[in-house]
Length: 252
Image (cartoon, rainbow, N blue to C red):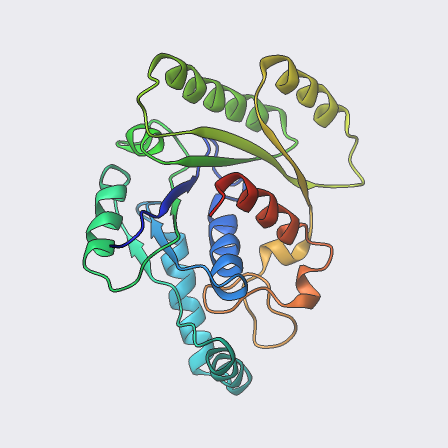
């Protein structure tokens, strides 16, 4: 019998905080570097940015000999094919994943969901509470911070009154931490999180240009659906620390 995979969503009530970026980065890190069988469900309708990134990656490889050689070398070394990316509406997200898994020969370890940037979108809240875990990127910007905190509080309030819900917990993690910017907001909100007993990951992700770039034709690869982050681009990114901390929570 196939084992039951873990269902994990990257979600927030605020767009533009890094949900799609970390869906791809974590999927590629776990699938290509850690040998986990990963499935991605892109529910960010209508743009489906993760699926669009895969299409862009495929076109990039098709016209670049270096990337073609890297892909052949990667498959020869690991035997791992590219992970599948499904597109779905938020309300049908888990059903879409389960149907695919039921008809697949692969025993999946992890299913990652990229959800829209507002919990008011039809089906988002229902999908969230039917996950195993949710991870929410947060940034040092007051309106975004308040929105994210309200989002997490709403989810945890629901869980408090609905113990039977599949969702085990929701965690926040700091993204785009700029060393040049005062940490006053970070310190103030960290204190608020502690007083409200809201779980925040220890890993903080620095503000770095590599998080804004897809796999190019030259240079180290970082964000790609077909390749893992290179050792050079991983250094100092915090992604490996974040992935390891999440893996300890998931125990998968």
